[in-house]
Image (cartoon, rainbow, N blue to C red; front, side, top):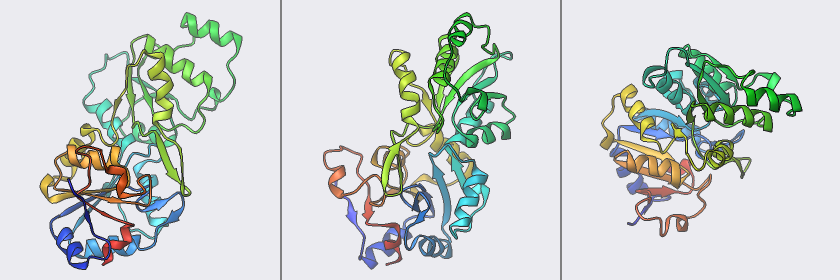
Length: 303
């Protein structure tokens, strides 16, 4: 399968844009890297809006809530509303509150992650522990081994372990998470991205947080809600009510963004080379995970 190179092709760009009514945008590695906004991002989004295109920001970054992302977008000069943002933490919260049938006495979530997860759980009135609670930010003690093994310090209402990107992960948190999983808690993850692009480099992603638990659980993998999970696509379609063949996914990762659009039956996928994917050679030999089109950077869509 060939991917169409659009950079510098004004006619090709115009034809490509006209095919779609909705553009789903990944954020990190597409619009910005860390706090660096890529040149032409604001102008490209303005151009698409001026053509009547619907914009949806779809992010696997679980550390920020939808409100946090709205604030970041606006701080970068990108007008946005909370309703235009769809994140992996929100997707997980919706699933836990509206779909997952937990026993009435086991509705608490043990969180490995940051405040973005907690905010979205709060938005759905889901009780949670762990997360940013500072009492977990310490070395494990001999007394901890005894009390965790006996279960005396474990919360019996925990029915879910939800793993996202956690900047304060430690042995104690993993020990608690493992104990709850051993006692039958559901194993969920906001997303399983192995890496996170920032400051022009790659850093450990949310998948690095759940990976130790996968190993401890004998290879059992969590149900994930970020791209490329089609649970997330179904939720996005349900919220925004669009025709999939008239939608295009724009991203920098083949294994998440581009796969998400292809497996979701979207009309198109567009890869940018400002994040994880660095060359068109990256999708050679990738089977069906080939973007419909690609550009060097998002600003190239200005023609």
